[in-house]
Length: 445
Image (cartoon, rainbow, N blue to C red; front, side, top):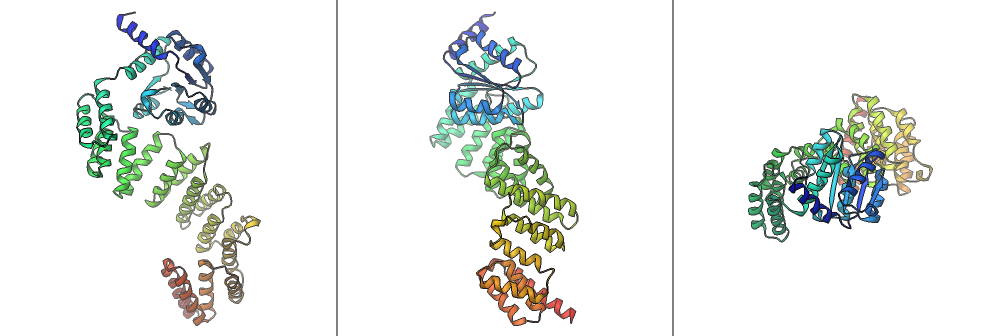
């Protein structure tokens, strides 16, 4: 053993003293090898906890708050990077903890490198025990004895978070000269400009960081935020789509991706996001709402030229929404607009019994029944709904159309006026219904 290695081992043994260590790996042999290697270089066996899956690892993070985590990239349907996010919740100050990711291929290794500052190092399989020991020791040593580059970065971060923006910018520029691939320095340089609302300069800094690492996580997130602030939604969407491709999905980010995909009309991407959604272990109400709405919008888009595809999307939306009336309502409206009355009637049956007195159900019921009963029956039913306090744009649209068709022009115009008063944002829609109904009546006459 040379003098340098001996020094590193001595420093690391001191670093390990008393520290809690968590190993998360599905492979039993890997867990044993990792534990032995750590014990060999000074870890206390009593301080090492091993788990075989994500959920157990997450529990140990909360319970033991380990200072060192060694985690496999693949944890069944979950990813080690997700556990990293949990680790940072318990140890937000990265200088106080060590997170190593075990990867099985170069693609995973590239993602680990891109998560710079959060993933302290990655270990690429297959590895020897000696290589593993040296990697762990060198990583810990680099945390203890910061390089010139990281020392200047830390000074810059202190200035930045202390509100000394000019000093911070100067220090980050200096840091950029001290490393061959200073993506992290570029990120913080961009953050300094962003905090001063200098969006163009911030944009350029993040882009510069991405020239050193095209999937650098923090630079991508920073660039996305700037593009959103600049209202460059198409560009922002492309960035967050790249983030979602390489880094684990979470409910908040997926909801944001869905929102932008719809806003920028990238309908072909929605089905892929639904697949990601279906594989998530946890989903909140907000995400369920976003995925359902996105599927409905996408389904309506395909109704004109790909009805089978549209129906499949509606089916998924209905399932994801757990019978939410607003989702069923939008599906029925889309189907009726495209003359798919039978399918609309089928979706009316998907309303839960406890929603039969809701405004959404009663309005949709009128819309569906309107296609199979006489105009006079529709008018009678619609009026009774309004008298019962069911004020809904659907009810008014149906009544306006049928009143005009039944030559009740004054009633139709009165209904249109009342509807516009209630929902001025739909003024054009009500006027179109009235005009179309009068035109149809004239053609028929």
